[in-house]
Length: 289
Image (cartoon, rainbow, N blue to C red; front, side):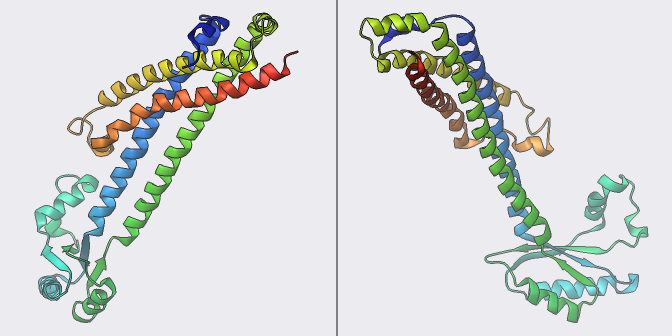
């Protein structure tokens, strides 16, 4: 905490105080949203990847007279395949619901040459996809197995990149905060050059003077970051709920114990301010005559 009386060396008002408070609050506000977005997109990609990892689809394309027979043959193959928990053919209503977003609600499923879809749900360690493909090619020539690998891998890469982007954003926010606080501290030191000179004449050491600036700017950054953090959390709470927004907004924000992460943002901002102000103060004091 330092010596509270030493705060008289630092101007309690002025543009340096305003700049420090505003920059810390703005950066903490942005940090909350960057953290929330990173966590939410990671959860969304993980959920999609997990759902795709436990399900597969078999598409059967055959002449109309052979569709039912090939569908039945594919279901028999799946019933004897280790690792398959459920295998069922989608009915016309389910296939119409899948096509509705692209072709509208009145899709004539029975009149179109639409392949028959079979939903496969895995259990345990799953099934041998390559072995199942070989069995299907031999017994059901019109069947094509899609184990969703081509969908999972891009989602996993996207999740990792989004997490990395979140960390990079946090680092950039911290660097920008340090730069602005350093500028404010240098301005305050320059404005108090005469006072610092007098303090040196009466025996004040540079560490004592530097600690005065460090204490004041650290507390300003802590206060501003706390305000920005609270505003950011309120903004997250005001986002549309899953029933209102749907889609991506379903998971946007913090969930469960992740709500504790914003609490650390003011402390991190104070730590950045402490390090930046101390380095700037000691360097400036060394350069002063």
